[in-house]
Length: 153
Image 1 (cartoon, rainbow, N blue to C red):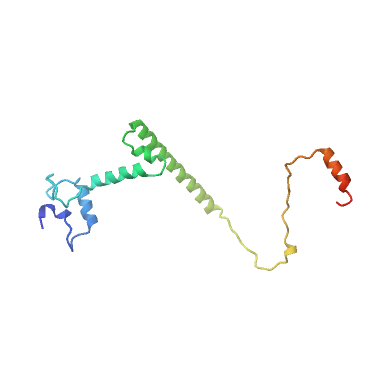
Image 2 (tube, rainbow, N blue to C red):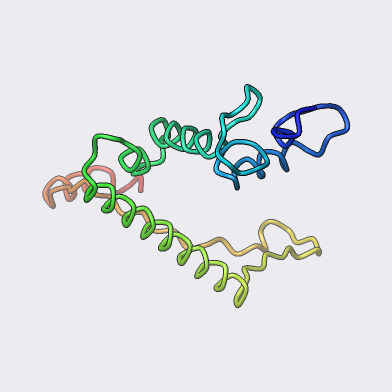
């Protein structure tokens, strides 16, 4: 085992790979354990670059509105700042509205209960019902209809 690059080599019984990736990330992907910025071995990975590449790819391909514009390389800095502020504002407002709904629910929860005793259907009060006909009928047509059909109504 080469001691210069031991934090980036994976062999059975070694420390978990998350520790190795963290060590490499903290060191900025620079050389070996001496911190001298030497040449990287084939097994050593620059996790800072990897994280950047994954983030840029996510921003380019996401369907979350606004993030796509924030991640585009050809956008002006002011546009990126605008989208960053817009996204942060939207998430902040969403969080605030969620908080308000949760607070309201905690203070006055909606309770649904059912009566366990049996009641005949005809004893249950029927809610009032109003039907508003939007078709206008002329008064003459209505009077002539009533005159002809008044005996059957």
